[in-house]
Image 1 (cartoon, helix red, strand yellow):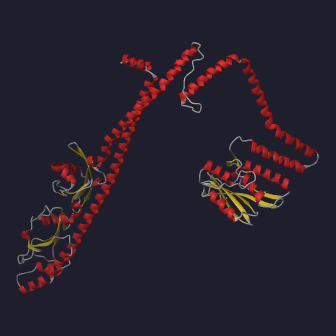
Image 2 (spheres, rainbow, N blue to C red; image 1 turned 45 degrees about the horizontal axis):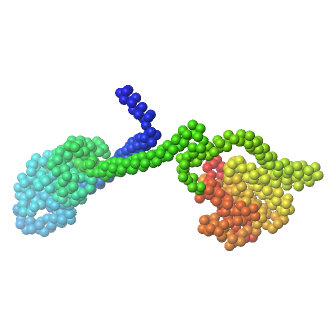
Length: 612
């Protein structure tokens, strides 16, 4: 074994890189592909089983409720029949004594009883078995007790509370369900009590169940004591497919039926097939209503997927392997030329360049880039070998250029600071303050350490701008921004508020006039931070306002430039959407001659702001 492993390691080590990549790609694709495919099918089978069991449970519960409802109908019919006291008294009396009395009974009491039977479509027959020697047995609803079998069944009825259902009636039991009830009159002298039988044909009582001849579940009503006595539709697909094995399936299921675990599916194996059964116990009938499904039938979809998925996987794998093989061969043929050139250079042939066949405007792929850079490296090596002194001089010039750039970056700030100091010396505090404001703005706009800044930094820059504008134009511009401390550290895109404030300064009032600008914030739906910049200036022309709003809604392609510095509302709007998505951005409302309000919508995740 060790010799074999060592041999394999040696073969792998000596194999070409293209062969190693081919093997690695094959293993990386084949194993995950097969595992994912079979895991997906297994998940589908599990979900399909759960869905099927839920459907079957719902169906068997519905059948259970339907059967119980129909049993109640039979009980109610029997109770209604027993309310016909005149009929019951007459069949227990001497029916042979008076013919006229018999005729009246036929026209009245018997007809009423017959109407009760006819009013219930489910009832095929209602019969009384009476131990009365004077009974006149001329109608199918009235029989001598000796016509009832078994004779001692009245004892069972007595022990069961005077009434009982039988899934299979004593008479015509293969096709009929019966409800038996004792009828004992006060002072009755007969030895045996009267038995009333309400009969219903299986084809009527179980009509919906017996009409189902397809579907995943096969419905059966089983006798609680005898699995061979069951009611089902022999034309159902399940029954047809099971054939002679149906009795064995029903027998195995019957042995596992448990009244205490009705919500747990039963799983049985018959031959090479697996079956699932869901059931409910019907106490008055001493029977089980059972839904049976074949595992093979339930899983026929996912099972067929195995072959399909495997076939598709193998086909895709074959294509990928061919593609990988073809690609790696082409790649490494080109790498061979690179290796050949390197071997020549190692021998001192600095003119052994790699032929790329690229046009001037072509860049090629990574290997072409390696070849081009390799050729350039050869050129650079030859150049450096003859120009060592020039290289040192270039390095010195680069250092001097770096120092010069550093000096330029501070020149303007130092110049402004010198002018400010001269203004203070000459007792010109207004000019000094204006220079401080201008310097703050320049420093803020030119130093871009990051694309975002704290809201407090943006507000400080705006305040410097307002101070400078008041100095330059002699206006009275009041900026009010009393914001909660919690929001001042909130980060926003740099220079997103200043252009809007600048619009208010230039367009809200004439030069030298006054305008009040107020900045407020609020949270909307605990998800958006709304920064509102309000001014009480001249407002916006309605037509211009409509065009601005159309562009902000994305309904117009006309560009917006609403400020003298060229930054524009559209620029701010697009920056916000690029930063945070389409749900954020800018909106403008205005009433000409009254006010203008620009609202910035930013995402908000801080939930500690309280109720402001």
